[in-house]
Amino acid sequence: MNTNDSLYYEKAIEYRDNKNLDSAFFYFYKAKETFLKSNDSFGAGKCLINAAIILNDKGDYFGSQETGLDAIKYFNKSNSSHQHYLGTNYNNLGITSSKINEYKQAIEFYKLAIDFSDSPLDTKVYLNNKANAYRKNKEYKNALNIYQKILMDNSVKNDKDFARTITNIAENKFLQNPNYNPVPEFKKALRIRLKEKDNWGLNSSYAHLADYYIENQKDSALVYARKMLLVAKEIKSPDDQVEALQKLISLEDANHSKQYFKAYQKLNDSLQTARSKAKNQFALVRYETEKNKADFLKAQAEGIEKENHIITQYVFLSIALLVIIGLYLYLNRRKKIHQQEKLLGVKNTELKYSKKVHDRVANRIYQILSQVENTENIDRDALLFNLENVYETSRDISYENADVSETQNFRLQLSNMLRSYASERIKIFITGNEEEIWQKTNHLQKTEIYLILQELMTNMKKHSKAEKVFIKFSDETSVINIAYIDNGIGIQQLSKKNGLQNTENRINTIHGTITFDTETNRLLKINISFPI
Image 1 (tube, one colour):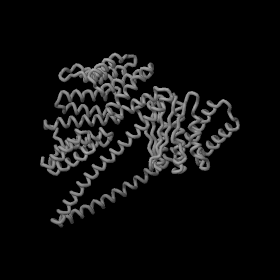
Image 2 (tube, rainbow, N blue to C red):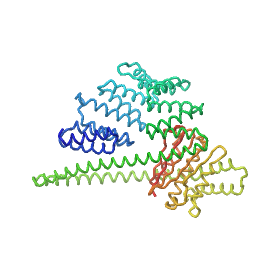
Image 3 (tube, rainbow, N blue to C red):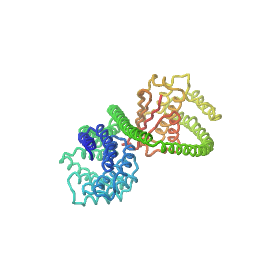
Image 4 (tube, rainbow, N blue to C red):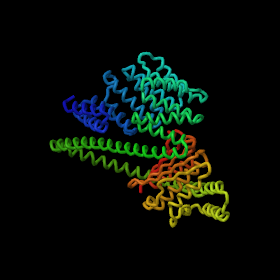
């Protein structure tokens, strides 16, 4: 390790220990390049592991995976001095895989972390993480075996570890058998954590107790959810604050629920903005590092070119040959792609008509049924007119969609459609549906958004058992965002084979994105965004 390598690496470690992760990431990448220039692959690997952990902490899980996998090639697995770092790296890869719900992959990474562990304390952590992955993958028996093994291991033991383990065992048994009562273990762990002043552990205990009581003892669940929010603020964990607010939205009365929803929306938006900013910033650091590396290689190549002109000529001849071969392969590939595009065109046509039947006929009929169900005095003429409209649409399904009129105010059309799903049981809350937003969009975007929201409301009415629906529209420079939340049974219980799958096809039509949150905490969250 030369002086510059040492300086950059030590500065990165100092920033990391002081929680200044942005600067730490920058210097780890700078140190990595200097390590490579001095042929120190071990040093470069250590830098990449630290960078991967930072990306994980900042929420860039795919970037963390990519960096961690890249780090492996810089280590010698048979070298005992490298094994600790390999264990750390595989553990981080397991964590990132678990966070993107790839639990089987996470389990394999944790196995590798355990194989390379050189510390009983690290081994216990990796075993606990592996058991958690088994539990999340619903392999409760495997998870319980590991938790009990940890509990019986006396080589490294403290009260915090004991509280964590009995909590995990109780939760695992409850998930395995809904009739099992985990409360005694949960409260035992809570008492230990209160005594140890373990705020991170307390946050976990309050979350578990709130989740357990949420079905049958909402008053108790509400108490623990409030305590969780206070502790989450104290430990400055925005993710846990968001989770606590989600619980409170579901548990509180309408007035307090709306207040918590506003707080949740503000915090969640802030969290997503910070993570997006961090991802872009780290991507820029990686890009600049690779660019500097490319510039260095280019300068080196130019020096070689000046020294040996003959070699350069051979290089050009080789490149020309590769271009000819590449062009030949490209033309063959293009021919195959053209054939595939014809087949895809037929399938897209079939999908187009399927979508039209679903959106223009099925959803419209269900909307009319909802209006009939929730209206005491039915306007017979209006009902006949609507049914006649559905009939005409079904006769010629290839015509342009008539659900959204270009001549009428779109804000009012959209608002009327959404509120038509309201009833004495279902309350609809709409914010941000302003005329200024829709003036920036074209008719295709309005139509697709109208049909997507109509689909979500139809699924809510049919399946979710929701009592509260929150819909927020917001305009951020060149993107329109729509946040949908209801307190029904959650996305896990809904089928995406037809209607909800159709919403993903529709949002792709206007180059947007739609995400379905699986960590519901008694809430269904759907985020929609598309460019203006």
